Length: 220
Image (tube, rainbow, N blue to C red):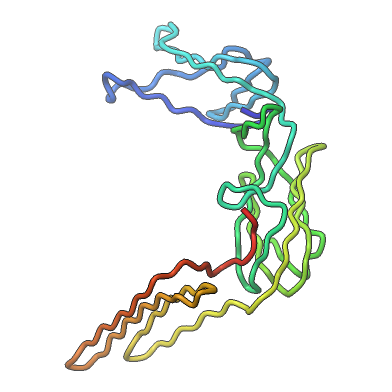
């Protein structure tokens, strides 16, 4: 758990799920604060969370280990990136995480700050719970910075390629088309046509596909 990280805990009885849960309390308010149902690790070290029974006896406990973050990283789908490429019009979520001195990813919600070096290339369309959602606006390269106190990480994002477009038509028939194409020109195309006549025709053509659509780049 990261020092400063917020989290919740749930408790259920293994032998009788119908029993009401005990009252959860911190073993040390100087190390682990509790407000409502939210715990916050405020000092490094081990602290117990106690499960108190109606007679105030301790029915169970768990130890929480808090440690100070030493590094911030920016991830997409749980992979660290320092550079990424997006197509114009695409939207992606990037997550900020912290690690300790032993390179372990730390749990707990933290208040990161996200900044763009150039909002003409990208725009922020949403933030929350340690993540930012970005939309590619125009071709170019800019930097996204995630900060937590004195710690920070930067991600260089390049916007290039063809813009993503979507279209839809309301009429007597509806056509949905999804395609994925890679450098070997393998393609998968699903086409479904419904007509309000005496006949219905379904056609599906499938070939092996291994490409990606929404993004390009991003070195694993």
